[in-house]
Each structure stands twice: as C-alpha cells, then as structure tokens.
Length: 187
Picture: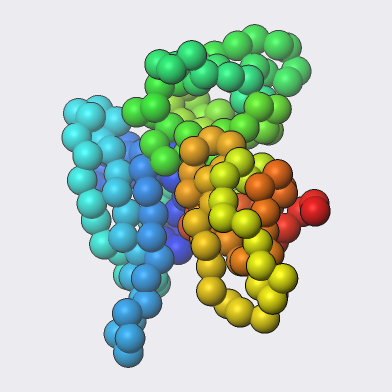
C-alpha cells in the first residue's frame, strides 16, 4: 500500500478490485481545506476513463507486477518502443497504456516496464527527467530576482512553467509526478 500522494502517471493500482492505470495526477491543497489528490485513471479491463479524488492520507494498493528495466527507444506515432537492457528484447506499448507518461519519454531514458500475467501494461517513470527546452521567450537578466514563470516547450512537447533565466537550448530537470520545473542542469 502506498499513499495517494505517491501516485505517478503510468502507475498501475488496484482500485475497487480491478486494475487501473494512472493517467494524470494533481496534488492540491485549496486554502484552509485538507489536501487531496485528483487522479484520472483508466480501467485496464473495460478501457473506461474516469476521475477520482483521494484524500492525501488515503492509501492505495499498487498492483503487484513484474518489473523489467528497459530503455525507451522511439515511437512511430502509434506505438512506443522499449528495449530490455539485459537481453535486448523489444516490446511496445500504446499511448493508452502510457497515459501522461508519454510527455516524459526521451530516447535512452531508463524506465521500468511493468508486466501483468506476461503482458506489458505500463511504465514506471523515474522521479525526474532531464529535458531540453526547445521553445521559450528570451530570458531577462533580472529573472532570478522574480518568481514569475514563463512557459517553455520541452523536446517531447510538454509545456512547463520555468523561471525567467531559462533559455532555449537549456537542459532542465522536470518532475514526472507534477510536470513541474525543478532545476536547470546546464547553461
């Protein structure tokens, strides 16, 4: 059992005695109310998508799956291909299986592909991914003084709010749980 705040896109959980894949997860703390986790998930059996609100203290059962370390290679528009780093076997998953995790898949990224009853069903992402900024407004010199962010487009198409001093071509660390800027990796 894990806390609801530890849910990540692509994770597979047992909810109402069925397997579900987490598509998106937002942790919110509105004003003086208790925090909660808004999760969009897909039932793996029926394919239906729905949202559920967990309290921050709720515990969720993570499905017991066989995990295999793999390296993300590429996508062809329909399938996302992964290679086993030990025996070089390849497997592929669709965007339906990966959910919001596709926004963090960059070539050579090491992930854990999760198998249930011999079939690949999801990918567990690392806590953060280093990604290249491909499009953003020019930085301003006093940007480190202000905490105002600006949108930046990553190499996967993900839009992240970044500090003013981040420029195109910079590599930044992005949290896979929240899709948020953590730090600049290179200049």
